[in-house]
View 1: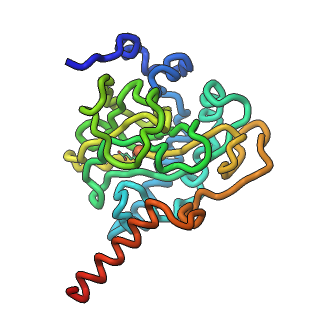
View 2: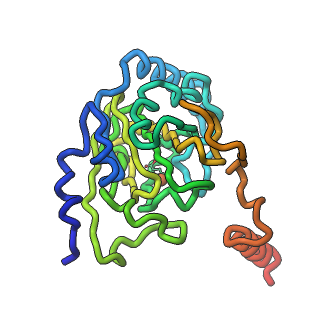
Length: 270
Ligand SMILES: O=C(O)CCC(=O)C(=O)O
Ligand SMILES: [Fe+2]
């Protein structure tokens, strides 16, 4: 029987509420804010989503094979800028301090084009710059176990970056983390440390699961995209976009090379 850390178990009933608890977040790596976003903001974002979906995502969408839930279409302005709502920096100041920047903003959705599960992983291994980043998951639909709501392994961020990118095998660790799969409603949002292990099941109910995923970080990180509050704390910047260009040789470049060679072998039959 694996050891579930007792302090982690003790905080399970304090993981959600209308008021952010930075001490619980530090230990858990996740906190669920309840009914924290004003209704007028949510209604505007939902209306914008419905129009966007009806006009641009109806027939098909551009599926990213590496991550089918990540929406690649250009968002309309109300959705592209929703991370600027003050509720988010008011919360994140308690984790990141006075000076906060945006790292990335996107949507992760489970609609009829991406109903599948997302394997257990941490996000830090896909990020560039400093490791102290947090996701804000903002539901514009209900999210629950039936439509592929996310599951969080509470406390697992304490292990930091695991050294590679991909599906985590939890059976290989001496300790076990309790899991939570919160039911989310529009107005709630989840704060998650980017090293926290998370996953999600398939959408079996057929009700779209629509989440915005905004990643924020301290403003001293040179990969910041936009200042959200305070002042920049760095005067050097570089872009995380297409980061493989920063390498002469790397694991990702090798995979690309091997994939090309394999395709060529299959094509020519030799
Ligand atoms: O959409 C989900 O359920 C999870 C997505 C996710 O964790 C990711 O894209 O990194
Ligand atoms: Fe993730």
